[in-house]
Length: 201
Ligand SMILES: Cc1cc2nc3c(=O)[nH]c(=O)nc-3n(C[C@H](O)[C@H](O)[C@H](O)COP(=O)(O)OP(=O)(O)OC[C@H]3O[C@@H](n4cnc5c(N)ncnc54)[C@H](O)[C@@H]3O)c2cc1C
Image 1 (spheres, rainbow, N blue to C red):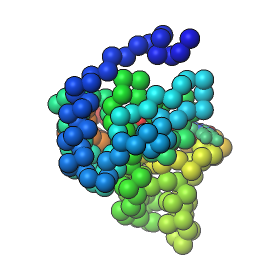
Image 2 (image 1 turned 30 degrees about the vertical axis):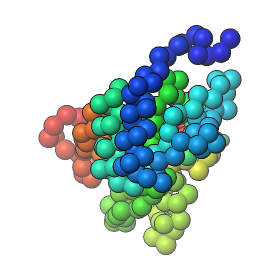
Image 3 (image 1 turned 180 degrees about the horizontal axis):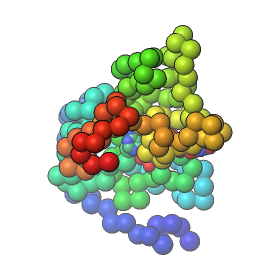
Image 4 (image 1 turned 90 degrees about the vertical axis):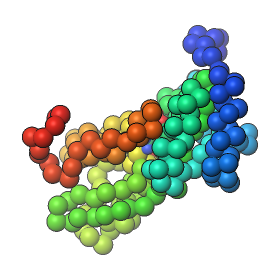
């Protein structure tokens, strides 16, 4: 029995068609709908069958991510973020169709503060990219889930790995996130300070 038989998800065909048109116009070549690229954005190494999205967007800025999410929210179309696809349990599958948001073009290290032992990165930076960038500082980023995962994907899955006993998991290593919510608004969850008594913990 296929997973879709166990857990049927209705496709919103009208909404999906509308969003495909909007994103093609907004992103041009950075929005792809070919079969091969869609399948690559839904692969899974488990028994779960591939459930491809209807299109793959390659945003370069937070504001483009907001535009994609707003278009999908307006037409009630699912959005699935995509780092490098190294997760193993069908995380990137699109059972009801929708749009995969591939963060590979948001791959800049924005700031490194060696004396504070922190840095600011875009979500598509991979852990190996970051370690190459940090090499000359004598510092390194310790979380190592085995795959060369993206920092965004690692934060989303609270990645761990072989160094977790010594250095913790992503939970202990992320100070703050800027995240795009389901309605397209952004929230920032904290500051670089380790401790603040302002706002929610
Ligand atoms: C050989 C191997 C060994 C592994 N060992 C470990 C291990 O020891 N510990 C461990 O924790 N994991 C392990 N993993 C799993 C995997 O590497 C991690 O889950 C990794 O954190 C996924 O990152 P990714 O960039 O590949 O994310 P993806 O697989 O692309 O996405 C994973 C999930 O995060 C979401 N997501 C991705 N990017 C974002 C974003 N920017 N914003 C919001 N949501 C986002 C996706 O929608 C999806 O739900 C292993 C994988 C492999 C292949």
